[in-house]
Image (cartoon, rainbow, N blue to C red; front, side):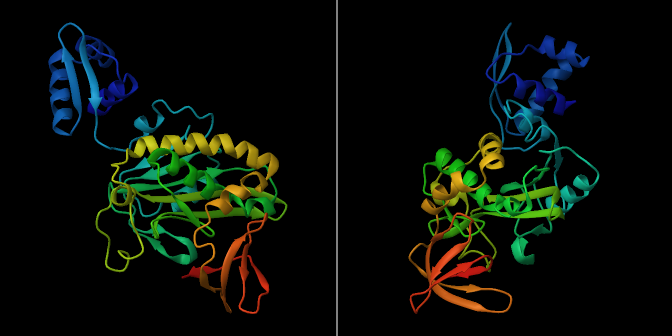
Length: 319
């Protein structure tokens, strides 16, 4: 019942709702409504109460829920279906199961905590409870396989742009899929797909964003950071997710029609480590050189010590 009362206030944000109106809508007494509101106050919800007008929600804790994500979400398809878990092993794993069972394009799986979060190249992702955004969403694209390989680059551009707009800081992209600020990783993107070369059955885009962490495990504290730690902002996770969904959906239609080319310059402008010498590790070899740019296909261009340019399709960068 308390969840239903939360939903009423979230959907009526900035407007007064009377106790009588809630009691009629939920078929409970006005005394019961008052008791639930008092419990919500203990959870961190702040209300303004005016006699004969009712209650107005002023502020609420940074909780993630299906109802809160959907409230005021203006997208047409991304996030219209949301599967929420307070805890799950991996949103990526759940998304794969759902996709195989035919859930629609744009379905989102999101959690407050992952116990076995997946990262790129088989790594795990540290997903502390309530301290970040841990989600995966399902796409059923119409474009060809070669274009699907660029979806991670496109998503990186959209996410970096969203973070810049919200927090007024310079968020950069470490090729191919990490978002950096002040030399540390704040977000990562993992793309997986199922299909054949002539047809993609579905794609899953997994995103982890460190929002509120102040401390990290010993093996991560020199390389990982959070939005709060670097900007001083205390992010509202619902606001960030909704902004990202809106930006992604708007730009996705262009990506479908025109490919990565319209976003290629934005990616290069945000490319982390440009002009720096790196080691790039691949399965069977290691390349050393200086980061120059990416090309229109999304391949990384390195200048090697002999002056020749190397075009890199995949690999792991070390500075």
